Image 1 (cartoon, rainbow, N blue to C red):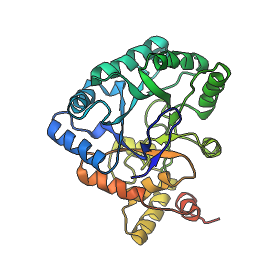
Image 2: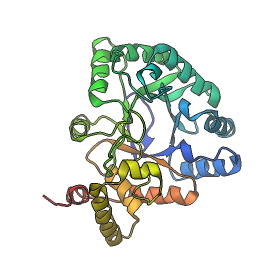
Image 3: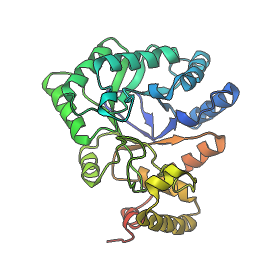
Length: 306
């Protein structure tokens, strides 16, 4: 396992993040087996969100009761919108309080290591969000915080406000970063970093926790209407062919080479990965060990070594 440091957190964070979505909610024996194996190989952080519902949290509550509250670093999200419209936005203090406290209650824990706003609302001053989060920080309910699907300029705005007012700022960002180029967002206001954002993350070293880092199922060959809608385009099919060629040369799978592409970017990057078998845990761990040169990264993305 490989690890990285995140500002305002006193623990090293494993580069492979366990995405809770594929954790079974009707079989605690199997769920515990997966979480125990993930921890055994060095994993220590789990991604969850209030919008995912009480089922996953109930499993985690049982797990923490059995293994201890500190068994995993909690990357908890909240403030997801209620609807795909301005009327459904929930970047408010009331929604933040509700979801942050709700995550804790559902999981039977006293704090979150991270609280990450699942969506943004650019009508809300970033400084207001910083103020709300610092209230929970002072109360000991959270150690660090950030934004998922937040534009990098908004994160910079939040941290500029925090520095000016002597407050703790954002520590993490969780957008989409993948070799797969989307035609459109997978979900409403799901944010994929562009070239400008990648340059900013590289320059600042700001921690980036990438979701759908292996292409949201496209490179794994998962057939679905959503994958077709979002990822079926000539650019991605050309990248898939280059992945197949390089994967054969390196003796790995296309999907894990795509994951390695994200993890080898010249950024301070982590990967969120859904893992529903012990085998998948080990396969994703192997992807962490794949080293790609800048020439190889450019080849996979652009088809050129220039």
